[in-house]
Image (tube, rainbow, N blue to C red; front, side, top):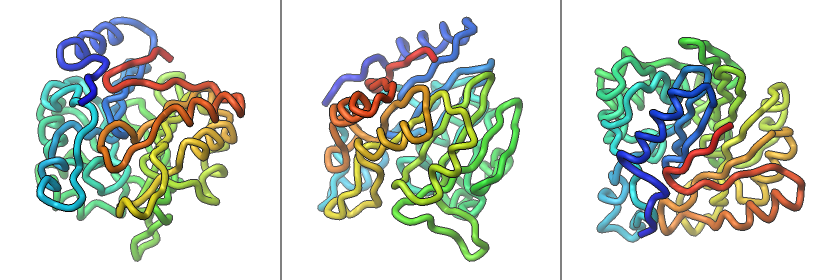
Length: 278
């Protein structure tokens, strides 16, 4: 198993040091999870901080064998203002993660697609209801100075509920002077670039594990597509995610590096637990 770049006390010390400064910083926590500190606020995007999927699939023909060690227990992450969940898959909506996290950060709000409210409450239980904020594609809300817009995502389709609300979203979070796009899980689709173009994006967080039906899970952009999207929306910086978590569903970030260099897109590849100042 790969060691984390930093974890536990070292990661918490790094976060604490950043909070004492005026410089925004983001850390990759594994899979699609990122912790953003900016404008005096802490935003946690799509955290998966447990081994629940490894346990669930251990005795099946689709084992979720972990590649990189866990960087932090969720009940050690305090001071979080906003947590996002882009869709209902467990690596983005994990009860083991959310229970510990919401206990450690009792003031945190949980942002979810409006279409998924019933599912979220079924998974997390009624105690989560006071925490919920709901949004749909094209809508914008502001919570405690954090402005978030819902972006339609295709995983594998832009799927909607009977009321026409998107079940899969990405988010553009405007925090302090930063605009950050977190893709959730998505393929490139016709509505994605038009939805992102109005924003002056300082950072895009994009998946690179690709879309391979033999994996028997919904797919994402691959490295080439993620680099091309980042360039198309004029992102100042691109960081890849959705790799180095499970053996059956990963990709090498080297192709993303090569493609970003080819198209002239600024990028940074992080290791689990690693942060970068923005």
